Length: 140
Image (tube, rainbow, N blue to C red; front, side):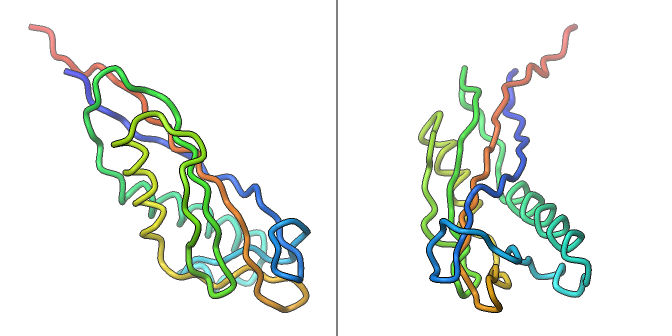
């Protein structure tokens, strides 16, 4: 029998400027709940990335889709209020898997927004979600 195994990683690809456009540089990235208490900005960023990965991974439900393997690229923005917006499939592989990846990202909790010059700014992310078929048949 074939089952779908899900693994992925997080990429921050967008940048934002002080006017709120996602095109310049930023001072701080968004922060997930549970990571706000961390004082070191680099450790806070790592905590947030790990938390986003764990959250999305926990929301994914392995689904059997015959002969479908690949990576779904999900783009989204964490806006000036820390809410995930503009979720879109940048590159999909199968409608069911695309929907699943998008819904997992949409379910992310509100975060502390990224900042530039002390002001909240929107920051764009992309998450590649890789779906791989694995053969778990038992031989008798």
